[in-house]
Image (cartoon, rainbow, N blue to C red; front, top):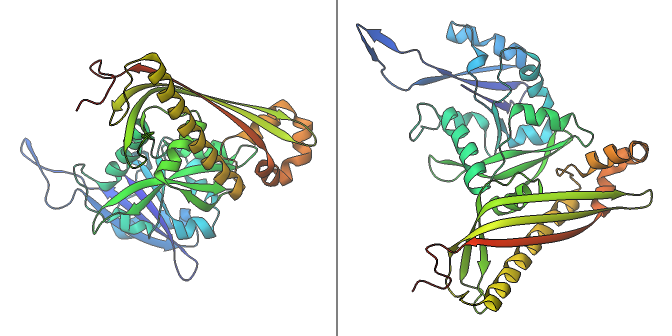
Amino acid sequence: MGVAFDEEEDGNIKVTTQVYKPVQTSGNQATRQGPAFVNIETSEKTVFQSIRSIPNNLGRRTQWSHQQILIISEKFARTHNIKEVLDFFIRDHEPRLNSYLLITKDEARTYLETEPHIENTVSQEFKQAIRSSAEISARTVDMTLLKVFLDLRSETENTVIPYFITSGPTDKTVEGVALIQNGKMIDTLTSVETEDLVMLMNEYINGIIEVPCLNNENMMETLEVILAETKIETTPKADSISGHIKTKLDVIIGELNCSDLGDEEAEKLFIETVQDTLKQRLKKTLKKLQEQKVDVLGIGNQVYRKDPRLWKDIKEEWDEHFARTSFDIEVEVRISDSGMFISKPSF
């Protein structure tokens, strides 16, 4: 169901595998006593050897076609190339390429020890948390083993992976993404920054935008994004590279606490405020990516496709070129509904 990777003090790779327990049947009824899963820990120099050691403890060979999630600790991801642990799961015929990946702030094995809230196993729960968060709030990315493999095989060799933290005594929650550069984790983005990143990546499905009131910055108004489209066009030249980013949004008003959109002029001013707020957010997140010199937007891949000869000359120093790339951001917002046809605060 799930597998976690940590680094041992002796340099070995600790592999914790969560296995679903078979249900005992008595007559026509199925019964289960205790948890629906068991965690098996093995430690070897390589992932494959650790996996082959599982039957020593379990008494059965693991069936990797049931795998749903891969968990890597932050410590391991910062000190090792994650390709070391992913190679087996890409190369072998059993593991699912649609398995989800996540990186954890603490030891990865502790996440498999967490009691699930509503699912049978915590592996299933983490998978649903990633999928729901990506689809409903855009607070993380829907990143599968196949997607990570393709990203790390691309010209830029960078990707992003959902990032989990401990949010309570027993709760683990998704909190943004980890930035992966050339196979190693270098930094994280918060959940809010991840919303902006997902929008820049043109993978935004649904989410909420908070906009401060014009006359009171401590009060916020909200918009639900129902349609988002972002296009990035690059202009590669030998001496400089520039990019134009255009984002178009269709939104529904979720909450109005101070704005009255009763007339055309007021609605125009409100839309301009939303566009400016979002533009500044996108600029801030893009600036952070450039400061970290990590191109997870595929800008380098665009340069490669448009001018392979130029890319060959600048590929080795692409991180520096990406950091110096100038971007022009354009945001267009259209209000499609105000909710119950009320264009002013309800109270």
